[in-house]
Amino acid sequence: MKIIIAGCGRLGSGLALELSRQGENVTVISSNAELFKPLAKDFSGKTIEGVEYDKDTLEKAGIQRTDSLISCTRSDEVNALVARIARNHYRVPKVIAQLNDSRKKEIFNSLGIQVITTVQWGIARTKELLTFNRVERVMSIGNTPVEIIRVVIPALLSGHTIREAFPVNEAGLVAVNRGNHSFIPAPDTKLQNRDIVYLSVLADSMDEISRILDL
Image 1 (spheres, rainbow, N blue to C red):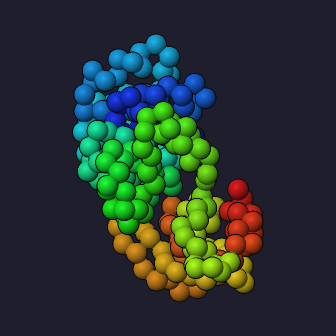
Image 2 (image 1 turned 90 degrees about the vertical axis):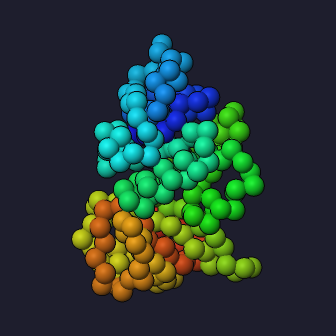
Image 3 (image 1 turned 180 degrees about the vertical axis):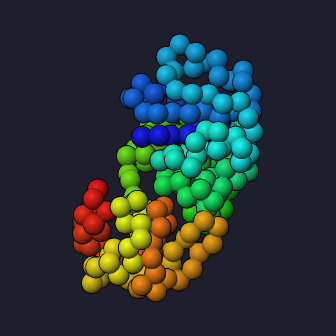
């Protein structure tokens, strides 16, 4: 799995070392090259000095092809910005951001950004979140078996219509996020790689959705 880590403080460097030891392809971005020093011995990945939210820096890190991005600088504002750029502009399938001020949690949640907090818990939680692939539960509808899920479209479904991709009777279309805009799709809307599709489904349909996506 290709992973970009924006920020190389305690959380960023800890994650980089853990994930690198697991054999993941890790690239770390930091505006302060001094922060790369803790990685010197055991890190097998790549480091890039540059502003974490700069487009050229992110593209140099390979954001167009990355599977996951974790933004863990000391600034919540920078973390939110990097996460939004990764998710909305580059359609990175898995985006996680560090939250330093818990009072901002609702803001992050409203932006649809998954958050991690303390360093030690954050490393464990981030590794856990990275194991989940293309289907995420966003919310449940009251005391019903209906859930809203977020699906990241894989390359194998690119060019297929929504009707072809999700022939599940219980799945209802909610919205598609593509690039920098969202829209309400028609059943014959053709999907693109890394589109983010929101569906309303019955909880017991999750296995069928996962099967369709070959997870």
